[in-house]
Picture 1 (cartoon, rainbow, N blue to C red):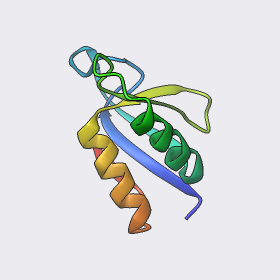
Picture 2 (picture 1 turned 90 degrees about the horizontal axis):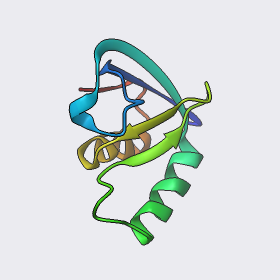
Picture 3 (picture 1 turned 90 degrees about the vertical axis):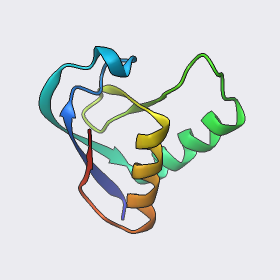
Picture 4 (picture 1 turned 30 degrees about the vertical axis):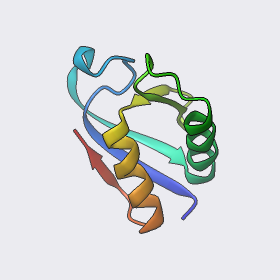
Length: 86
């Protein structure tokens, strides 16, 4: 699977999960990019930044939490698209 669709009931463009606005969104991610950015994030993790920033195919910067990172990683491994977050 090359492209993953993320469907969310919240706007993932906010860096802080508490500041996310409630509304339906769909984001498309390149799976290889996710794996690469996730590996780099794990190596250089900064505790003050709880989320992972990703660029979507629509050129939007989205931020996902550690729990959501696990859901996305699992969806990629299982080749399951779309994945529903929040």
